[in-house]
Length: 225
Image (cartoon, rainbow, N blue to C red; front, side, top):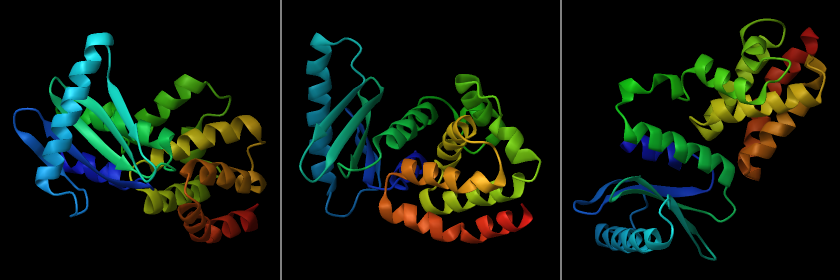
């Protein structure tokens, strides 16, 4: 449970997250200290009321978003009366956060042993799922496994994980698919892949950090090309 919250907090722009259960209160959280237990409990009660009221009009209501000038509060239902709450910067990468929340819910709704094929840390199944959805001519997992691009791409993925955490696998695979459809797959076009990755990171500081970290991989790849 705590690991799921920590994975979410690793996303650029996310302040922290909490899990609330209507009868038991706050079960876990990694929010800053200013979010006292009583404050979190009050937030959870209010969100539970919002969901209950919303269900009167929308039976399939699964998420609420409360947008303020300085922060956005996103809540998704794990099970009846049990919610995960995420507080983030309004400028955070919502696509990345949405994917992360989906994975967190899958992890929280079923035993860990029952969901290995959907885990972001299991490269072959994750890559296969992405490829089946997009159906690119060049399969990303093949580029990562062999050939002249294998070593630099593995390095690029590892450095991305150092910057944004466990969601690096999904973000890199999506960027790689778009790159393989848009550009000729070659070492000389790796900078275009970097541009796509940095765009999807959605945080200028994190993107700059990533570019700085992968300079050695790009220079080495260019020399080999």
